[in-house]
Image (cartoon, rainbow, N blue to C red; front, side, top):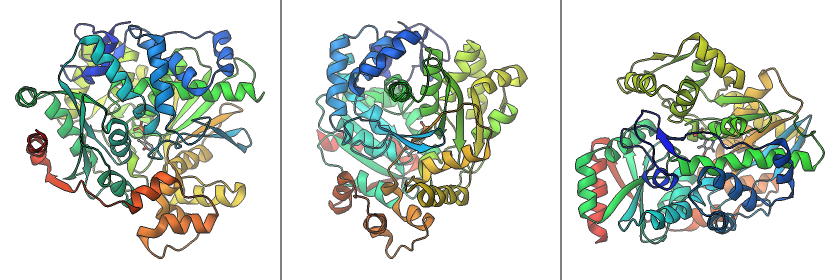
Length: 490
Ligand SMILES: *Cc1c(COP(=O)(O)O)cnc(C)c1O
């Protein structure tokens, strides 16, 4: 299988796509074709455990890797999860099922990909004979940062620098990042929002002078953001896994379509669901749920992607995003026109709108439904699900539930993709279930007390460890902050 940039040019091997992270021309790598899974082969997935199922999906894209090598990576990666099923499906009744993707080391769905990406990168380095230290740059709205730090910490041949909006992440998220241990990790609080961090990382990685400066120090850039194909492909697996679960439980018949509701920010999670559909998984609709930063729901309603807008802070900070990078992949797959995609992205970079027109919009509407919910609606969803079912949603998953509740339901069964543990956003979750928070720093303990649920161990660790990564910088200082950290390491 070859991989091509969404902005045109020569194809590269799967190992090159994983290691480069982003194409030299600024585009995102996409596979030349979708591997196909027949209904029979989907039925057979029922028999597999999660690491094996995941290895099968990953191997179907990364065709120059050895299946056994991939399996070793997924087994090791998912051994860090605290639930034996890795991604358990919880029945909420009335055909709604919660896919819990937060049993990894950082309690958010990013772990699903970031527990295996370091292993996939190591295999890629071996294949390509790469001898430089891979320098991972990450822009995070909160959850990716910790998941990437945790995934890469002390992994030989790698170093990782995470940029996060210094005032745009939750208390627990900041604690998780600043307390990260390891010799090859750095986290920097940027005086700007997530989009500024993401733009900065993209710019640094595309800057020839910076590439030369880090190469002289023995490093080569890569990305662990969801623009890296190695991030996207492990996420495809849980769509198949939840379908296989419903088959195994006899809830659905083979071939019956199910819907997925996805709390969306950078469009990586939901795009993985769309990939699963292209591969033959019987998916009805993908519900794209946004918070008040609702550029995507506007886009799916009128085909216009707005280039201007002010980012608003919400109780679902991991979805506080205005430029959803992975949408570029969908645009390419549906048009196969690199020049067109390049033009749209250039408009966006200039702060202008782009309009995909009614034909393409119609095509998107076959697969996607989109809407948004504000903080109050999300809080209401948390409160009512807890009161009625005794199940605690986090603030992101709650946006999905709130959106789903207001929309027509296409299929008899729907899977709500639950992206974070409620304990990561304890203060807001407490208030949503009608409890007062005495002390914001202690909200996680108070939530455990109020609900009788067990506070997850990784969070206890983050809340009690001493912060050690305390650097901050201005948006314009992101380059220098990186270079001086590299100098301090040598
Ligand atoms: C990252 C994240 C999202 C958004 O996922 P995308 O792939 O960026 O759309 C939603 N919820 C949580 C908790 C996240 O960490």
